[in-house]
Image (cartoon, rainbow over all chains, first blue to last red; front, top):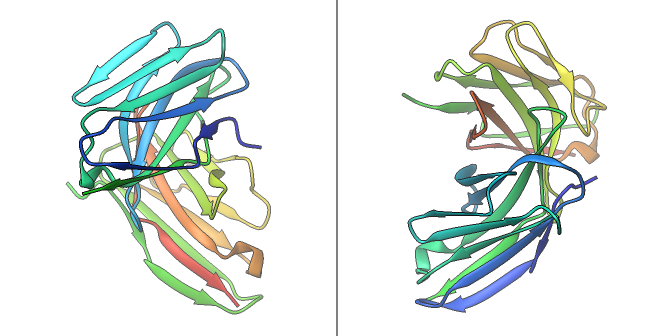
Length: 111
Length: 110
């Protein structure tokens, strides 16, 4: 079964707007990661946040983690058409090195 | 530095045929993984390996076998393909937390 559930399943915004995607999970984790997938391509790692961290930034990306609510959010600021892709959260459970992926959010940024 | 490569990129099989998907990485990573991605299902882990000569089952291992004879290669085998195995297969490798993915193999079983 999927560990992470993402919300929304699809998001369509205009260039320049901010995009927020949410991820909820069920078990204790070591870290939570966000990946991006362009159509027909493999996944690319974006950012990792550890269970003892609450917020992390990387360029236009901001990730938050609330372990009490078992949820995370990914914010992409000042979006660009090139940000159009599917975004997946993945959790590494405390029991091992495997990642469990959510079903993804399809982001469309309209020029 | 090619990263993670997968062979082949596309394949069409008939039910009952067998095939092997090859994953190779040149980053000297210990961990390697095979996932399948189906529409609306995200990625599901089939098998993984924590080092040369070791393999372990993931979430959906039935109908698949794997081997890790060399550290840089991870093979995924389908002994008797079924239409339910139609999917896109991704290989990944990692050293610590971040996983590096190959471009995928699109497999259709008729």
